[in-house]
Image (cartoon, rainbow, N blue to C red; front, side, top):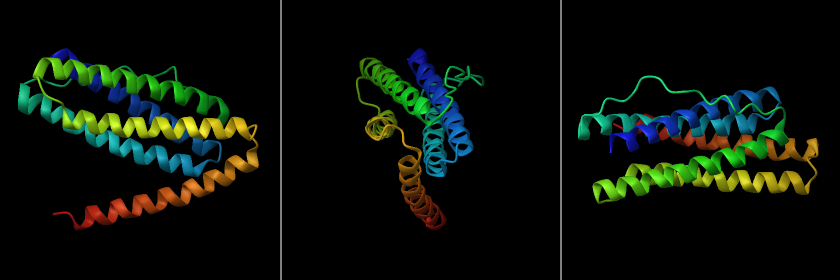
Length: 172
């Protein structure tokens, strides 16, 4: 079980590093909607990483490793390259997390609720990435269309962030 937990933690660290890279790169290309989206997903996955680390110690006495290998393979050159690489990257993460979930089910005899939440979040991101890639291909990666869609995403993510911030202020 310790190996499975450490694999999940490692995958989350790789995912968080890639989200951070994606956020910085998309911002540098002028895609602020994507920047907000990746920042928001980074916060969500960071929360689940902390929950995993606590469960590892509290429930199983497993000390979480302090260092993880950064994901250096993810360095796209533009939004098209990013979209193509991101779809492959996130699909791989979802597949590997599902494998870990099966391992935990076999080891513990029950589903892991927090891992189901992580997989669901990653799968939703995978579906959005696939749709964005399809749209980019359909529109032949026209810069004007991409930025128009990014503006819509930017406003949507601003609303999501405000709702989360408001909910966190009232939570006691």
